[in-house]
Image (cartoon, rainbow, N blue to C red; front, side):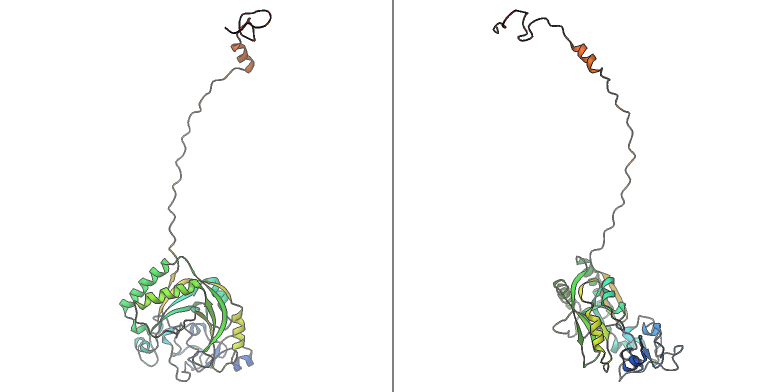
Length: 322
């Protein structure tokens, strides 16, 4: 099980239609649409910036309708957006059932672009779940504060982005709830990070049952159960393999998301004061030597003895040394 922030339309709204649904394919649609908005779902509804249980311009009086009893995904909204809900219940009451919390990794901006597939999850929702924390309402403020403090320390203690290998597209839950196309991710660095996080968080929170064995994956697209267009999604996912770096640690509790940069905080380079201006010293005056011929003349000494033994002038061989 994984906590995720999703569009309120899919898969919980019965009016939603995928561009890969039979209706969408027949009409040549490229974007999601629905009965309320046959020309395309407004960005504020798709991005969960508006609660479509409330009236919206151009919805023809059609609003969110449960798909086979699915609950409205209140956990997918940021705080403050669900100011008033249509059934009169408070957000807190709704959150008792639907809010989820998790610890996850977020790919680097370049890898986000590469992992995204057309018609799939938006960039800001792509993540790799490390630990599912359970319902958010089960985490009191003190525990959440401890988790945030731990997250800051954990992110700063790692040497840099967590490295992994996106090696295989896969189809999860093909006949169950929320069928989806995912990218499987492996790697020694990722495995070590996951084990460290799991051990640390277990000391802070009483965790619900986790999926065993753990398969590191990034969910790229959620599919309609009746849709058979999974081959197209898998083909798109297959082009996304290769090395991937996760540069942020994400802690999410319901709609409250905190992303923490992984790696030591860069140290500020101290300002270097400019060197003091050099003091110009007076040049040293060197004595001017006379020309070489003048020097030779000055040093010449008259000698009229024997230039071999440096004795008195004589004829013949030099006398033996005294």
